[in-house]
Amino acid sequence: MEKDNKKRYSEKKYGAQNKKSRSYDDNRYAQKRPSPLSDAETEDTGLVIGRNAVRELLKSEREIDKILVQRGEREGSIVVLVAMAIEKGIPVVETDKNKLDSMSGFAPHQGIIAMASEKEYCAVEDILNIARERGEAPLIVIADGITDPYNLGALIRCAEGAGAHGIIIPKRRSTGLTPLVSKASAGAIEHMAIAKVANISNTIRYLKEQGVWIFAAEAGGKPYYETDFKGACGLVFGSEGNGVSQIVIENSDALTSIPMYGKVNSFNVSTAASVILCEVARQNRTK
Image (cartoon, rainbow, N blue to C red):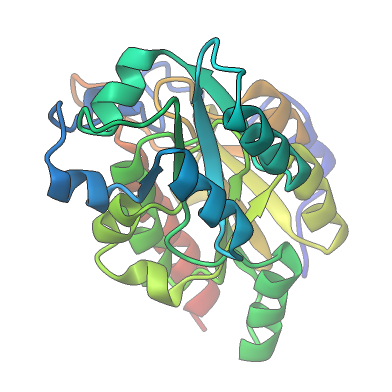
C-alpha cells in the first residue's frame, strides 16, 4: 500500500482549515426515553434488576456491559456482587437512587442494576481475520465513547452498509450492545463483528502495527473527499458533544472533516459516518 509521506499527517497542517467545519455534535440529536419506564420498556433496555437476578447473571456466560450500584450501598449481598463483577473485569458505576428508580420503572431494584449485552463481543484480531478471509483491506470503525444507544445503533447500520469489517467500542464511557442499540441498528448488529476493548489508544497503536491507517473524524482536518483512504483504514468517530478525545487524536495518523456550508456547524455522528464511510468504500472499490 503506497501512502504519501506519513510525516505530513503527523504535522498539525491537515489542510482546508474551514472554521465552519465540524464533523458532528450529537447533543442536539440525543433522544431521551420517557420516565418512568413501563414494564415493556424496562425489558427492552436489556436491564437485569435486583440482587438475585444480577447474581444469576454474573454466574452465567452472558456478556455484561456494566453494573450500576446505588451510591452508599455497601452492605450485605451487594458487597459480594460488586466483588464478583470486579473479578470478572466488569465496570461498576455508582449512581443515585433516583436514576436507578427511573431505569427500573420504579420496580424494587435493591440498589443494583446490570446492563447486559445483546450480542457476544469478538476480539480485534477477529475483525482483521474477517477482512483477510474476504480478501479485502481492513475497514474498521472505532467508536470513541458514544454513550447514546440510538447513535451507536445507527453507526453500526452505516458501517455495515458501507462494508466495514468490524466496530471497536471502549469498555468504559460508552453504551454497550443493549436491545436499544440492536433496534436502532435495524438488524445490522447481527452482521457486524464488534470488539470491546479496555483502551482505545492502545488498540489504535496495535492496529497501526498491523498496517492500518487511522483517521479521526474531527474539525480542522482535511476534507474527506480529498483524503486518501485507500488500503487498510480505521475511522474514529467521537462521543456526543466532546468529539474524538485528544489522546486518540494524537495517536491517529490524520484528521478528516466534512466541510459545513449551512448555518449549523455539525452533523450527527451516524450522518457524518455515512458520508465518510461511503467515500472510503468508493475509493477502495473503484478500479
